[in-house]
Amino acid sequence: MPEKIDPTLISEVRKYGHFDVDACYACGSCAAVCALSKDSALFPRKSMRHVQVGLREPLLASLDPWLCYYCGDCSKTCPRQTEPGESMMTLRRFLTAQYDWTGLSARMYQSPAWELGALAAVGAFMALLIALFHGPMVMDRVELNTFAPVMTVHFFDWAMAAVLSFFLLSNVARMIWNTMFRGGSAAPLQSYIEEAWSLAWNGATQIRFRECGKNTARWAKHFLLVTGYGLMFVMIVLFLPWFQTDAIHPIWHPQRWLGYYATAVLAVFTAEILWSRMKKEEQIHRYSDLSDWLFPILLLLTTLTGIAVHIFRYAGWPLATYYAYAVHLIVCVPMLVIEVPFGKWAHLTYRPLAAYFQAVRENAARRREQAPAGPQGAEAQPA
Image (cartoon, rainbow, N blue to C red; front, side, top):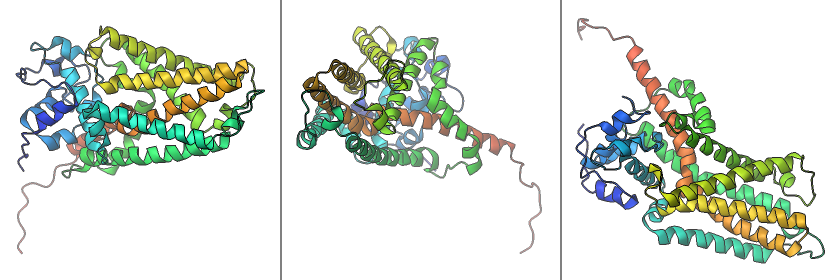
């Protein structure tokens, strides 16, 4: 069945960032130089070609943009300077918007006012909740759990996690439909089972990132950043009564050194990301969308306000502790509510899923190749 051509596709994709294919003459040098490109995932050339000729459905079914980690080698070696690496980044934004059934991702990526407005609206709502429902402010000593009862905050965390999970998982379902089932291309169940290990492995290590280009330090920094974020997420969502306490623990207590590790890697590596974007020395940082700035800025502000709460609490400054805690929530909650399911943070889910689905596709292809051929030359039986 011939593919339907959509002449509006290229103009739509360009709303999400830099995408220059006018000078591209499909020489294939970008795919040839990419350490991760192979016959079963020939990128960035294949995805760029889909856009160039208006093949919307093959583009929606493609996993290639998520398999690219933007080492920048393709952009450095492109003889026409079409920046294929940045084009793949643009396609990741486009695909995030296509998976999102609410339409909020598309609005935020295409309009800075929408993204900043959504963050401000959630932040203002959070400030109103704190103003209306905070507990008594004890002023002769620090009682954070009196100002913000830990179980109330804990139940709020669970409710927020449930809402975020609903939006993110429903968007994931759309990704699965577009990439693995649309057009009758479903893989056998056995392939999903045999490759399930790769989902956990890639989600935990992002090991393909290490194979991307020669700069393995970039993978190490990303890995440490993810461990800090993941550790803090687990301590807050699952163990908040243990983590948020008015007790002053000794320095060797796990509550302190686990928190210090997570805080240190979050602060150091988000600051390093921002500094690198400002300098624009690396290929990956030559172009920056608003979402590329907000992602590390919000995480750094969340970390710094958390550090302020810790310092003020240990110093015994009640009012400063309560206000710092309020600001911490006003920054953190919008970051999670808006950026995790609808913004750049969604790649934490889409990328390991894409690596898993690619492994499933390759497994299914091997099964088809190894399947015995059907009988040939058999005479037709009389009716």
